[in-house]
Amino acid sequence: METTPEVLAEAYQNLLRMSNVDKPYERLKEITRGKKVTIQDFHNLAKNLDVAEDVKARLLAATPLTYTGLSGKIVEQFEAKIN
Image (tube, rainbow, N blue to C red; front, side, top):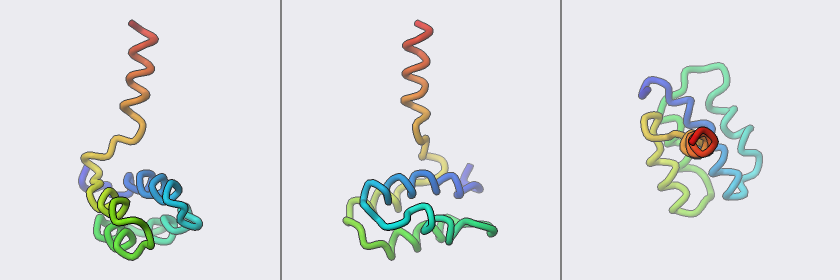
């Protein structure tokens, strides 16, 4: 999982949207499209963003191993339907 840092693009894009960063999709596309992306690429982006420090901290703390997206909510909804 640590070898697939591109999964963080979703987390970054969502946090950038919530922080009203202009064109979050395009910002992520710049660092991910057509190349092998690294955790350092994401960290460099986070460090250079004009966002609140707590947002930067959340971005820098995200890893492919710990980021689960909406999977928790999806499982809860599914469990509620089958139980």
